[in-house]
Length: 366
Image 1 (cartoon, rainbow, N blue to C red):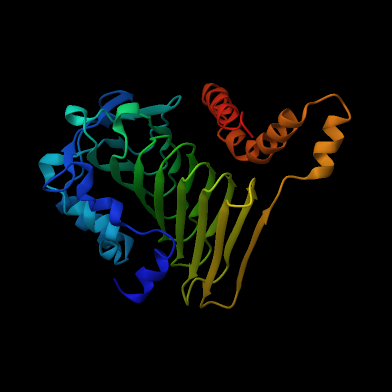
Image 2: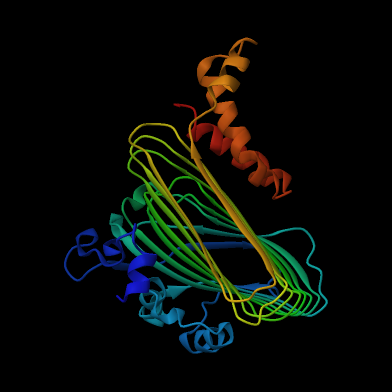
């Protein structure tokens, strides 16, 4: 692994990807997820993207991400052991409601296994779609491994919103590859609630003028959990906008990491790139590492970042206790208020209620 990749994975060893102890001799056993979709068959098919198709997508993205170890591991899996979905939205089509995709991970023969997925989301010119992808927990999965590669292609004028919830209770490795064309708008929200070990990469290329990308995320860790989100936002051309807002909460001896790398190419004038990462630690042994990174080669740009790591506000807790709210409830209310901003941005009522309930359960022992 070269210097750049070593720095990218500074906080996240990748031995879990191929840990032979999980299934005995021969390494991780291949396993198949249960896939459920709530969309018309002409819009969403259960069919993994092939390696040949991915080569074309990687070429369009203009980056050498095939060298990334998560991508290389995914591509190295035999096609017969790979699952996935394809969502194809034709030109000028406005998808009604929300498309849901559910992944569940049962254990093969009661043993921890490895699940590999390759998904594709292609949205045509001036089309619009909202998608929720839910990675459900499976109690019997134990220390299983999940490696997901999702490619998003937004044509000119397309409007795409993707909300991904990871609650696997396993080791989750994910890669989102997003390539955008002229005047397209893509918003991706990631919500990480209960994963033993998580590493997610998001590689975004704003390839034509007028493209806009918004990334938001919430991560909550406890026990010995590890959660690492890495962003590379590549502004390749002028007149594109990006915005990142991520919030994390870490307790016990868990570890949360956020790296936001904004790259502005030499000719990408009039770029607007904003980034915020805010975190709360709830114990002396919990750790948060946040790394804003700006690499700018154009001179007419607006780029800034902000990062904070702190504790709960004692004055706010005191204020609530003075009004008859118990200490534990006051702490939970402050944390819920901290992350509600991102959950509420989904504007999906049933999903919002579900996520609020799950977050409340995660925080009930604080």
